[in-house]
Length: 447
Ligand code: PXG
Image (tube, rainbow, N blue to C red; front, side, top):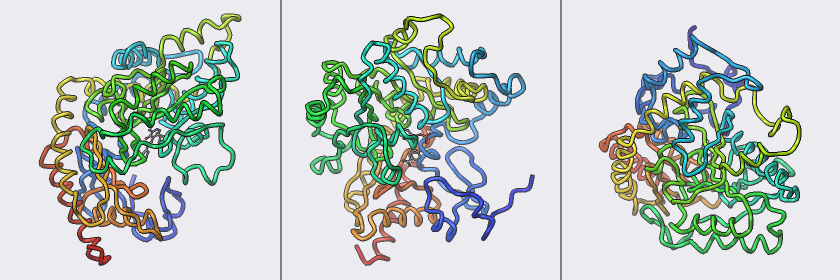
């Protein structure tokens, strides 16, 4: 098949996701090949991939072990019905995931994305309380600046205003304050201040009452919100409060899962075990769509112990492509690599270099905060009051010209390089980003 670069009207057939399509048409950014930590454009440029795609390809592009596993699986079993039937690899993968997940998070429900994982977890939380004889526990608590995908459950619990404001009614959900504090600006790794922010849960409960609340859902660190890292005791405090008030705690680990923080999960980093954990992205190294919800023994057992005939479906939920054989093959091959202690060691050692390199940009014009944890970080750009998200997007466009793909969201530039990059790659990425910021400030007369 011939691949051609689209132009003019032909571009309009593809309505791009989460994109300013009108702006895209003015200056289309296309990639046509990827290798290791680089993307190649049809025009022959080679760009650093500074976000591992969309936070999802930590092993880089073109990983042989994964592509061979998918090809082999394709030759054996291309699809298996997801309901009432399964296939051996799905059990093998679940055992692998249970072995990697903390504590008694040992039961895995599959879906195809982080958004589906979020909605699956929220539905399971309600079904669990019903099975426990407390059907009135249906409301949810999320956090400002939280991101849990784009389905109705996820946007209800999510705390990014523009992602929910045009969609009308959502589920009943309340929000904890976000954990970004002015006094923590330019913290390296975990910030000092903020454990007390978890106590805002008590204020919500004062009005809503714990008897109505099913679950609290948060990301261990808010990725899309701009790598907002909580202080070290925040999640422990949230865990204690949830236990005291009989509320489930769900960690959305779609970004933090499988090594991004230098530990397998964010739950491990903060030594806090949730009742459910959602993941996606790195699970298959981004190569096949797959998400999962990992639940505690108590949740699983409660659902299995429901009274009724044994042909009753315990949880009426699932997708045509749950535990898709090709996704399972990609996940097995990814996790075999991501589970190597030496790889986690490498992430932790690169994290130090990454921290120094990103914080070297402190003092550049327009840079109002820099945050990092593990191999994730964000540079917060002072907003133009008239156009709050314009500067970050324009700086990102200059980075593209300097052959670095940089993700922008709101007024943040976000970074999550592949685990396989070198120290020199990290320095090169931030040196080009620094040039782009300086050039932008000069062009705008802002330096
Ligand atoms: N939860 C979290 C914490 C996420 O980060 C989702 C759920 C939804 O996953 P799906 O697979 O449905 O997209 C995400 C996705 C960005 C960015 O640049 C972040 C995501 C996706 C695309 C871009 O911040 N996160």
